[in-house]
Image (cartoon, rainbow, N blue to C red; front, side, top):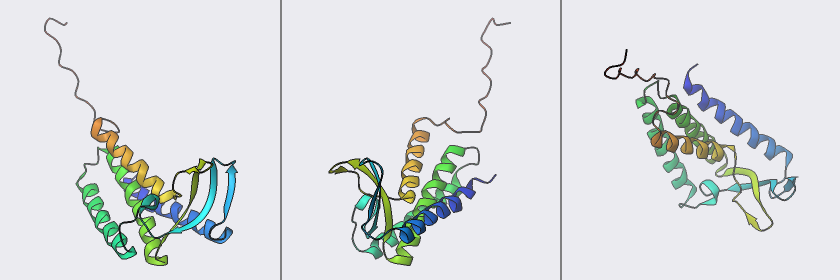
Length: 164
């Protein structure tokens, strides 16, 4: 199976989840799923991931498109045997595309995953942000442990002197 199939799979999962939230909930509505720890909270975010603000929505979109171009180049430059790196890049590309689609379509991003306890809450995020985060973590793992996820077999160890 081609690794790149992950990009549209991530994009579809992200956009489908956002469509369900936008249809089922009112903006600002919050539904507790695991007590106060995990809630679905429908918000719109004009900033970057986890509510960071880098300027206007146009700046976010242009930076996202430039980053996507770099990711495509990295993917195409990565040997097929480096499966973990390729999967990770596809996760990041799919997540980036999910949020780019929102920015182009709505001018902002739909967020709804809300974790925390009481007033100590992580910024509300979405599946695209999750895929980007997991993809970046996998890229870090591959950088620290280059053989992780590689389908290339290690060469057999050379026999030691005197071994029969």
